[in-house]
Image 1 (cartoon, helix red, strand yellow):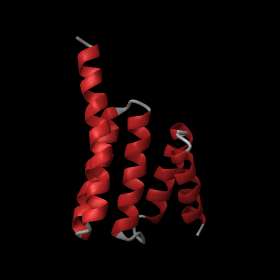
Image 2 (cartoon, one colour; image 1 turned 90 degrees about the horizontal axis):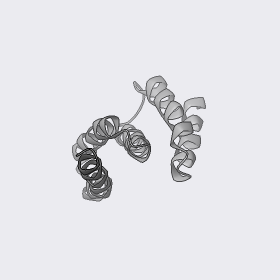
Image 3 (tube, rainbow, N blue to C red; image 1 turned 45 degrees about the vertical axis):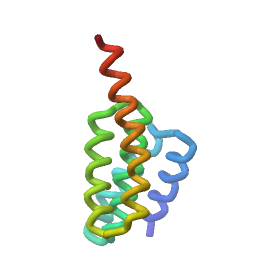
Image 4 (cartoon, helix red, strand yellow; image 1 turned 90 degrees about the vertical axis):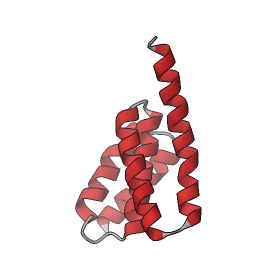
Length: 104
């Protein structure tokens, strides 16, 4: 129950764009409850981590968690959850393209 609560607090931090505070709570939630977690819940934690890392400009970690969430969403077969991730992919590619052109 404690880790479920930490995950909820982390979700609030993500919504507030307080990514630095959210990431440790999300990682702890994921680590402590991974064996008991249903696929969809795990996918949502991965997506929150992706959102946080992308928001902080850490595109490498952001992409890793985004791909993990997409893989799990696809396992569920839910078109809604799969398509909801596309917006985050668009944000990732926008920042990746901007980072690539800024370094030239």
